[in-house]
Length: 164
Ligand SMILES: [Zn+2]
Image (tube, rainbow, N blue to C red; front, side):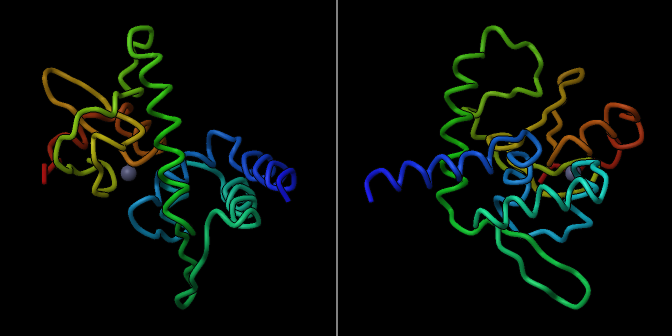
């Protein structure tokens, strides 16, 4: 059993070893989300996203719930979020001087929740994967899709920002 657990552990990490899949875990860390919303937040083609979700589901990392035509995804165990945060903390600490891109935001700031200016999702600067700083204002995003959209047309979204 002792060695079997290492094998199972390795198998689990294999399912996690993809940046998009890690981002999906960040997205649904607080609340379950329907596939269409995850797709928009990540800006991934449908087929591509389905594949990632399938891997996560097969590994038992996410679970699904059907409501009408919608399928909602959520994290199956809170420890997956904890583990992800612990790894990110180490990486952010190690890279805090080298990395100037603020998308790689340090997790230490425990600022209250704010809203993603693109999709309106509640995000915390502590856990959000993407941040954008501009003339003293800081914006946080649920995922790369919203972040890229914001960078393309910041003016379109800045006006709509409501800090919670
Ligand atoms: Zn968003």
